Amino acid sequence: MTHWHPDDMTLMNYVAGSISEPEALAIATHLGFCHECRTHVKNLNHLGGALLDTIKPASIENNAFDALMATLELHHPTTSLSTTADEEDDINPMTSTNNPLEKYLPAPMEELQWHKQTKEISKFNLSELMNVKGFQVALQKIKAGARVPTHTHNGFEYTVILRGGFSDELGVYHAGDFIARDTTHIHSPTALQNEDCICLTVLSGPLKFVGWYRVLNPFMRWS
Image: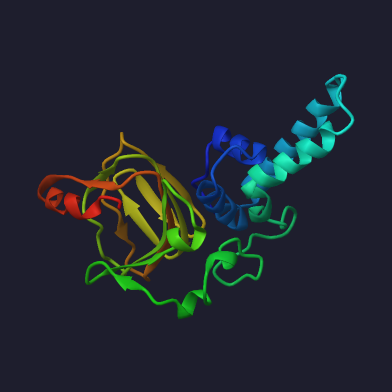
């Protein structure tokens, strides 16, 4: 059971299709774990449909509907990321075939070639595979008990735990939890002792290390 979720506004924007593809991927991945949020999304979809039914149609040109549908197809990247498990038991995207990450991965999760950032932290970069700008999207692997240096953010960070868990100054998180951080947060995630922690992370700006770790900041700038 998940205990940390996207807020209502984030889920509303997801349903409306008004967020970026990386953000939608993080939310869709969380939905695979979380029956509560899937139910919330389903209700929001029903509410949106009911509101549309109350709107009086305006006079439009004959080809306006076709033009509108073409626009939606072009600008609605979240469609392919939505989960189909609305009424089913929670899914572990690490093992399920109904995995929103699958379309972006060149190999099964267990066969990925991880890039070592430190002795205890590894990364698999998804940004280039997704072909998006303005975001860093990655899988992060933190060895059991290892600690990420203390940092804040130059934008927002969404994290969805896929396996294991970690703690920081604000709580303890397990598989499926959705954690949002921004420029107001300073934290140092530490993987729980029982197993390695694997997360999906979405950043809208580089990390900003604090304390003596700030010597790392020049290496964190985006190209």
